[in-house]
Length: 396
Ligand code: EZ4
Ligand code: CO
Image 1 (cartoon, rainbow, N blue to C red):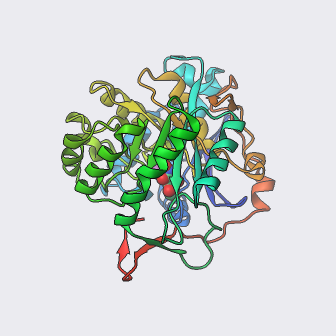
Image 2: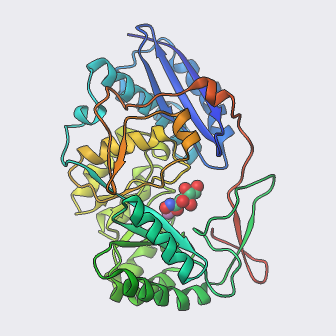
Image 3: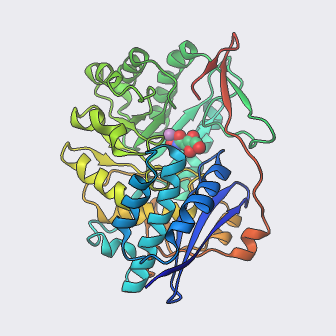
């Protein structure tokens, strides 16, 4: 079997997605997700100019060898652009292999370790009434675990509180760490009083705190029994998590901006976190994610694959197959996609009673409607940036 073509498709059915479609001489095709929010064209260019020519004529069954040759052969290792490009190839080749086998991908990963995969959704509100409505809407959709983000008095915009997307320049948000640290425990107190002790609640600090601030927040949130506190501090300096871990028993989740296992080395081997949260799409694909989870399992660390709206349904499908197969599954982030996005990427995975299942279609169980994709062309978009009241740029 040989790869005869590989096309990169950029589409924007409401937001941008980058897709790799790999075709073989036997007519079997594979799809991979290469979406890197706000930097989509960089990955598309990397794929078109540097990766696709290397794939033509190769055997799509040699997934590990292809991965290693793209990773080591580039000489310039790691980084989100490179690893998103490699991920798209890896995901597409697993799709092909599973289709040829006539099996859903999870069967090739060892088969199901559970019947279904618990997902969490995103609730947010500028104030408590708006937040409670948002939680209730998710509960009505079936969610059984909820991430809670909140506005802070005195701040106009806060991460996780929806605002209209992008435009020609990044939206500028404002930030005040002291106000946030004072306000957040009150919000969790109110949410626990309203929704009771059983509902799993999560929170994402989105890299905005120093290690000592993160330690204090973790302690302050202990009475509210969080499922986790996510990205409490930037983790380029992994050692910073020692300070946080030493001061709080609130579970910690990190990794959505990581792209190789080396980003986790200290965090995992010193058991400084409880959940690894990379996206299949940004971590080089299914193959390295499987290795990461097996590494993490030795330290009682569980999975929590990144699954915001900016992961395409292809990346989401790959995630749900992994979730079903691995033993150390923790939880799956799932924001869902718009109807239009789901129409561009028809898929076999389902969301019922707060749980996902990858379905039984051979391969990933996903298709691409190329005509509909072409009718919604790429539009430049940026993630927001964040500034303190004196104008200083802060982590977003
Ligand atoms: O802000 O993927 O946990 N999820 C998140 C995401 C990220 C976006 C950035 O592109 O933090 O919503
Ligand atoms: Co996050």
